[in-house]
Amino acid sequence: MRNVNVNYAAAGSRYGSGQPRISSLIQNVARHTHTEESALNRRTFLYDSALGIAAVAFPGTRQALAIPLPAAPGHLATPTADQLAWQQMEFGMFVHIAPNTWQNREYDDLSTPLSEINPDIDTDNWAQCAVNLGARYVVFVAKHAGGFCWWQTKTTPYSVSHIPWENGHGDVLRNLRKSCDKYGLKLGVYVSPRDGYHGASTGGVCKTPEKQKAYDAIYREQLTEVLSRYGTMVEIWFDGSIVVPVADILARYAPHAAIFQGPEATIRWVGNEDGFAPYPCWDAIPQAEASTGVATSSFSTPHGNVWMPIEADVSIRRPDWFWSTTNLKDLMTLDQLLEVYYRSIGRGVQLLLNVPPATTGHMDPHDFARAKEFGDEIRRRFGKSVGEVSGSGRTVTLHFPHPQRVDHVILQEDCRFGQRVESYHVEGLSDGKWSTLATGSSIGFKRIQPLTPATVHALRLVVASALESPHLLRFAAYNTHAAPPAGWDAHSQIWAPTPAGHWNGTTFHIDLTHQITRATQYLVHFVPQEGKVAALRDVQLLLNGAPEPKLVQHIPNSPASLLIDITGIGLKIELQGSVEGAAKGTVLLQQE
Image (cartoon, one colour):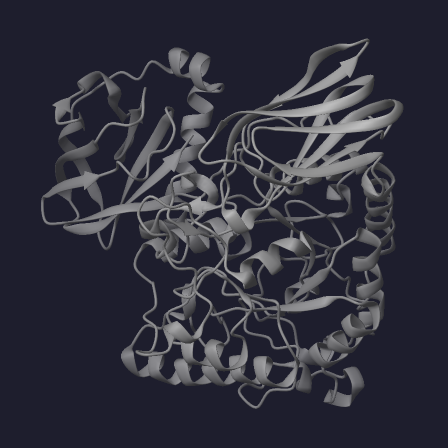
């Protein structure tokens, strides 16, 4: 392997953190081969998904679902009616509880006797928490990766029917459906394809064809039970994608649900578990990325031909998804929650905030109180505007009947026509003169834009750049008497890699043109199907066919990884070379 010195000081000055950042990227991408069960997270699910667990739908069933179709050439991507209805909910509450709640772990090690799991489940308490938050729907983890099922099922003894609660007759999904109906909430469900009890790994992958066939039957029956018994589901999670064929079940029982990951996906993960979306943020994505089933926000583009909106998920006890006796210290503060709100909903993506019940079956009082405090502050800030208007074209003006103090605006495009605005500024009229109060780039479904506080007679939105003539659904002004959270406009790290290609043999040639959408630094990691990558040799980064040796660097002590610097876009970008060691595998691309 050639020894190429990486200028970490330069990288640090350009990209912000130098060697520690590069090292953490390498560790993140490589961790699927080293991570212990207790530390697994959605990032690991996606690494495993990238290694080839994409499922194949049953023939003839795909068109029965509301799958977003690619836009015609020269036209902007637009949402389906179901996607737009899902986006209009804006805010959901995630609920994680499983046997590992009793183990003080994030993943179930199957060690807890079912006789010791006896919570006093109160789903009205959960629903009230969601209402206090301002959430419009709940996504319940009815089955997590350990395989325990919280509904009455015939498929497994590892379920609620074998715990003391309600003498084995309890059904959390049934109760939660009633509570959601009572409190005016929609219901979604997470049914993990991974199942430790049945020996199925990420995506529902089993070790032998015989075991796969048996598990496919189990999982299909579980999903059918959930979707056929408990009413309409607005969202269904297949965390880490899914190899079990379920398209026919979705088409029959949940044709309008938002599908998170898998071959039938209609929405996508933001790419981190911080609750932060990138900005600018685009709902369009290339069809090739959308079809992977594990797409994230990393490769969004205004020129994508498929509409696939984004969901940002985060836990109120970040980073833990499950309640434990040790993670109260991680309960997010009000300021942290406000930052999440501004950097998710405020950037046009859905927010799914997890509030995990304790072993009591109720929300922890500290979490319940913090959720209400957060919801109350959002309602105080944005519950009522001081004026609003809609309009089309590059200039929309909002007049006030008398001088009005303003410090925020909320902007929304009419996404039925696609996402069009690329840059804008907001001006205020005072003493007969217009002055700029804020600037921004994308708007999309929603943009919360803080302003330089001012007392004005009118506000004016000026669109400086747009893909087509803008249609503004809402231009609303607010006088919150509050500053935005300190990090409201910070850059968001999207740490989920995207499969960029494969190699089979000793050489590779990968076209990265459509996956690189920003001029920045990228980590390229070669993940072998088996064995190890000993070295990457004769590597060339080609821009419009011309080698650029100074823009690609080997990373010391990481023979399977490269750093590439992209200084401009709009060129054909290719990477080629040879692999020593492993004969085949997947190439992952990670944007800094």
